[in-house]
Image (cartoon, rainbow, N blue to C red):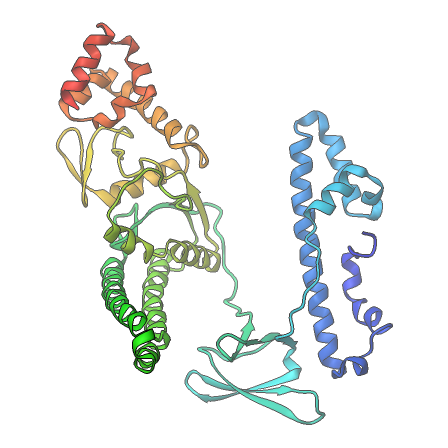
Length: 454
């Protein structure tokens, strides 16, 4: 362990230390190429150390909470930054558990600094790289496509699956002025459009139509391919030559994979444009739904499941975070349960959503996505409903708020169900029945009134 984790200050000394037992001649590499690679590996080790330190500090604070353990935490964190942690059994065990050590057998990439290559522009989005190779005064030429000139440190990667070279490099987008008081905004992620914000603006219109069109095309294509596959399997023993021709000419995936990548690029472009339009270069505090967990026990048709599979929730989340980083914004995810079923004016469960409309208990109709976005904005500062609460706990909190609102009107939850203001599905929960205790009448009478309305 003593040799695995070096000091951060030793990164500058990594090159002569490695060259003391491994010279460039033994590897068949020019000295500069070896120096750049060693420097890159040292930076990766340093980043791994920083991640390990951060994780261990969090565990220290969790193990020793409160003001009484402040001195203990300070001492452990001090030992963690030096070699003293090796003599502390607790810290030694935590570091061994969190430090991601191992070996790498990567042989398809190499790092170049600016002086190791030249970048010449051929056309609008095409550049030619002249890279230093193993032979002196001989440079290898590679043609790459990029929408900006390549400069700075680059990583040349050979993609064996696609049999092509990839260039990874950092792009400087400048500095961002982050205001002390960011404007807060809530967004509702949707299928018909990518985002609908609390300022009543839709972003990424046409996403649902394009996703549905692509889904229907793939469905029809695969259905026809299934018929050809059955014919191919049937002819394997009768006419092997014809079966082989069908397999080669009609059941290959090359053209379909190219078309699929094109369709995905179109969807990604819409999502990216929606994220850009949402921020408009402004530093915001964005509250969004946490849609990483699937909705349990929700039945839907196969056609709907197929369309939702092409929704690309992960791409929406990544695009939102990317543009937030570029604009200096902060994205905070909130608990998504019942955000589309709450009346944003009263903060209660009174009302009903049908399609793109949300009808309040007093008959006023709101735009459903705008209403949901405002609820998400309010939930971002809600102290009672936290991100990792269960759906049942969220429902109990909302029912209590609804009961208090109805009490001010001289009504009860049971009256709201009878009037059609409250969805009767809530009446079957334990939280609802617990709140009905204060309503006069026997339990049999209450259950009879509920059954007649649901």
